[in-house]
Length: 454
Image (cartoon, rainbow, N blue to C red; front, side, top):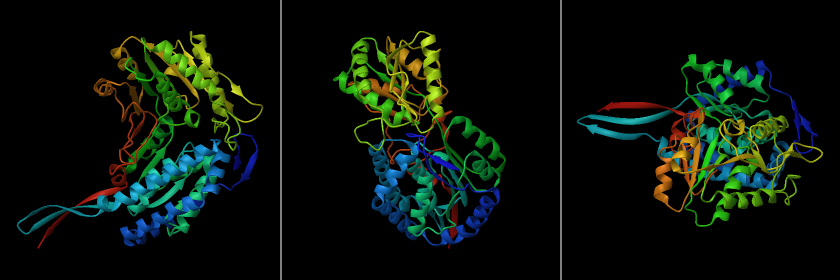
């Protein structure tokens, strides 16, 4: 498998893919090792994860460099991702013991009732390329702490990072067979689906997530799907600083080149503030410069998948053909690599692909609305339900609007953020189950009810 630099089109290195026989052998070794890992105890498992947390900081320079080289994000964003991953790990370190230890819930006469939690067993973590550290730690950290063994398949677009994760976990004391990387593309993922695993956890597109759920449904094991979004944002007419709001919205649209499941993908603006918002948004969008992601003077890196460039061009062509106007950007840039200008479209409507299909790139449609009711109707006009945002100085109004939008996460005067203290859960085509929060710890366990007499 060739690991390519999307910013230059050059080969970084070649890595052998895991063969079907190797993948089966990895599972068999994981199955044999999981029982001892469970018996090692919660305190020991937590101490290993603490060491992993510390090694991420110790090797920061190498980790951020390789992340930027293989996915194309600016070096500062790679640093930010590592910071975010360590923050989430700290949450799991702080919360796992209280969440997982047996809890007496009732005592009556000579009977004591206790709620316990057992690990699932051996799970598959089929991870994503856009935030390989952030979306990875959502799964493999709580899974390992709970006593599971993990077959971890990093995205083929983030293989170097996946191998770094495997190496550092082993250096932290996680047994080699308890956490094992499966290297390859879609065919390697398909091999995992054939194995008698005890849980499947996937981050990626709705199409692939649905296929995974259908193929493993007969096994009756837990399936967690963290899928995409077409995340809406509404700017009301009660705004204290419209320029500041426009800049914040632009960051929500274009951070990591919009390659985030919770990136803002549709913007609705109240008619009373529309013209001024558009002026500020255009100015901010034009200030973002794509270029060499290892050079800190550029705010935008390369798209990770070169094929996405043509997809964005198709969305823009469709929108313009149906009456949209390009406010800023609109085309690929540079003589090499998968660079695309941050792009804003106006005069859009919901007949256009850009307002219905997940873009997963630096492109946004902005639509004028007459009132809150129209905004709510349009925000709900989607097959997805991951996040939704409202900007307003009237907090009661913002919360009332969001209470009518079907999304797993609601943002008031912010967007495109994730907290480990709150569950990350999609609705409709945005996913199944939850990661993060204490719910995201318990997701990797089976509950056990203990009835103890005497």
